[in-house]
Image (cartoon, rainbow, N blue to C red; front, side):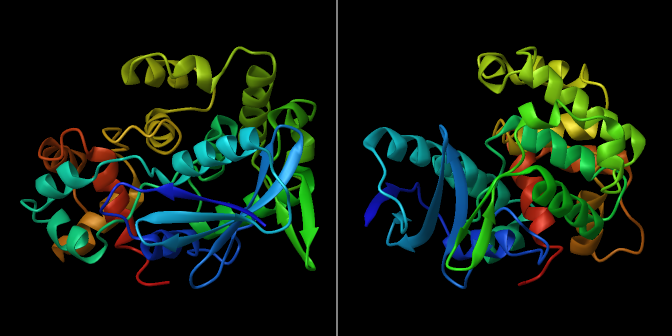
Length: 297
């Protein structure tokens, strides 16, 4: 069996990451157990199933059903590091957060949690658009339908594992086809338009990565259907920008209210003031506050 170890910047808590990855029974893109996660990855033209578990200060990556080349192992390692934000040094975040009334108890409780994201730009944008102005549970339902209709899959030991649909496939659709999955008409159009931009080369994560965060944000805002919240969310979760700040996020406001124990949600101005003390770590502060909303699932 092929396997490898990935070193991880400390502090790191794999169990905390598993809690996040286990938050919805509707999740279709990975499968968790109490101490592992399995994910189907598209590496070149191959669909390779990986299994991750913690081993000391490392992530143990197993390929239980495949022989993989050194080049494929390097691709998988890069994807896993991006997915779980493994190369981030969280010590400066902890130092800052220890002095903050909202963050200090969360960092104490969830120390080592990483800002788990989406290495693929099309997945990040599509998920953000699906989630606009609907409940998280309904967003997961729509995502499952979308993945099972248009994604690739592989059956291993009687279980189907899925990959997110490729932009090239979605670019060929018409909005009516996504409407069948309960996408709104506008969201259907947005997702297909983005798929076409990516397919024809007008939108590329690789190209954007050479730009500043401000320039990436402006490019994202130029996409039809992408507003400030979506742009900031994608900066956080796809471009691993720890300073991205989705300031109008409903969950963020709920989490602040919950942490403060107040009857009213904070205003945008109040959230901005909190953000001033999180400078450079607004994305991580948001992620830890989101974590406070779903207990120990």
